Image 1 (cartoon, rainbow, N blue to C red):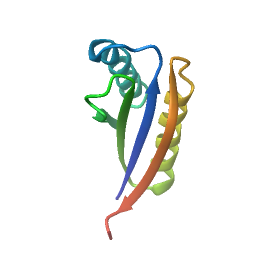
Image 2: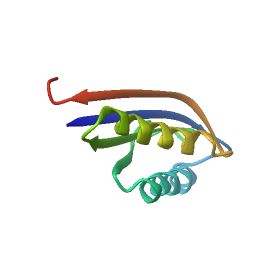
Image 3: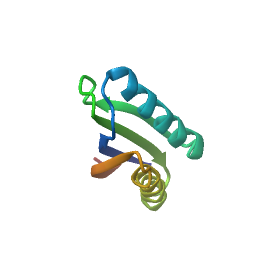
Image 4: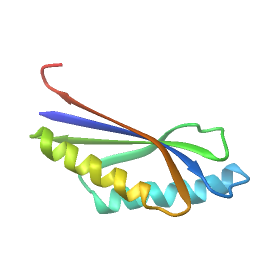
Length: 98
């Protein structure tokens, strides 16, 4: 068993309040969940900042290659959104021996 974890640090566009931030981040997380039903995703950091967000994505699979494939696809989905800037993406794959 392999567990893949992806942490995305993003900078939001013209966002001036936490309410506006939610209106950008929620649909983004929902799109990840809709496109990749085997993944779990949530806003995991920078909760009190208006223009920054951290999104965490996790995948469980029987192969490391499948975990990496899904995480790469999720990263591309977020990176190609024109209203945000992807500052960093960190991937980690754990196996049942760790």
